[in-house]
Length: 171
Image (cartoon, rainbow, N blue to C red; front, side, top):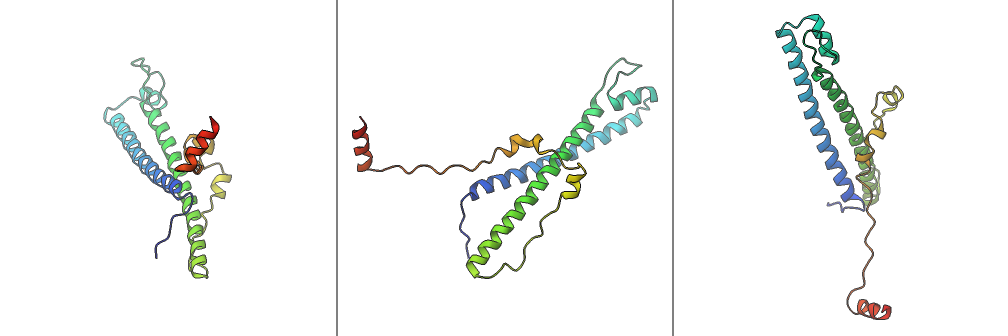
């Protein structure tokens, strides 16, 4: 049995593809940032950096011995923070979209076979992490969320003779 696409499916497919792509890229970037942070820490240990220079390196402050500000470590920590939030945000959207898709499929199943679907998914519950402020702020992702607005269907155009007569009446 082939299920026919319904209105909004193209938009949903684009969003799903973008979500999976964004999550994949985010996880790759996060892994790279963590690897770079670990290498940087190892280089500090190998170089036997003094405690007077180590704390400024970790916090991106002026180093007393060289009078240089090195922000590599704090920038990596910031990248890890942002990439973690991005991963959480995209994963939550994927969960929400999969649950909504499950509901659509269950509805189609019921309409076609006149009985309830055998299994439906449980809705993921993010209430506790949201209540504790652990979820990323959606306001930080408004640009991403506004990429997927439902397109209005095009107005039907008259073809052939009716179109010609319509033009002559105007002018």
